[in-house]
Length: 356
Image (cartoon, rainbow, N blue to C red; front, side, top):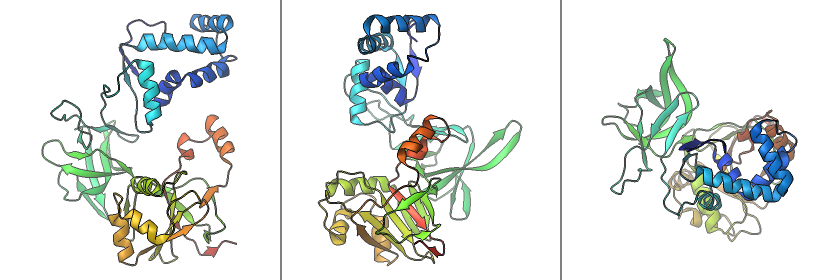
């Protein structure tokens, strides 16, 4: 890239941009690649720089060269996983002032490609993050329960997104995207909410549960951002549990379990309350939850005697395969990177055999 002139646009994963902006990561990357650099002219220049300066000083110099080469470029990357610390490093690397960034929501589905974006602007010219215009590139529909309707006609709000499109000359009807969207407006091009939720899906790695829990052996585990089972609806548990974690002053990331009974009629929400927490019991948690966004679904289920809260004093689970082994398999391309994601909520649906 340094051999190019007048770079105007770079599109790359956020992890790649951070790999340039974070000097420690760039240093480690150079160190790891010493034995794999091929004999191109660009690689020869880099090898010569490392030989003359050493890896540490070469990383500093390389970062300066990258920063200069990209200083006038537009950088396109996903911000969904960015922390404030990540932003600080990228701003420093690119020479951006805080608040000068321009961003847009672009919803790209693996099954359908680009689907929607927040093209609308507010009075200051910034994109509206709370809604996205649906591109006229496919025929979208939504499903709520067993009912399927075109997105332009439905009266439902929060619904599962289905898309029909052409595959060559053959139509593919109602592809299930696995995502849940909110219909905001249907005039002209339909608008959906800026937040796209992942509907519950089966977890593909085994979990070993805390000895404090009695989980039925062979139980199925589901994760996601949206759950609707037997009328128990939970929307965006990440927002809810992040709020609870903040109010309880928890140092650890909070993940909860919801365990169904064998008849799928009653549910127990299990929250780990460790020693570092400021919350002292179920009633205290209920009080804190009542102050959090998205709690209405939980409150309704508790009031209807469909859900009750319980606490445990340990982390509820760990992966059966050690994290180090999973990470190694991800790096080797044997498993997708998403397998390492820790979800805020795990739904446990039992089988009839009680674990020992």
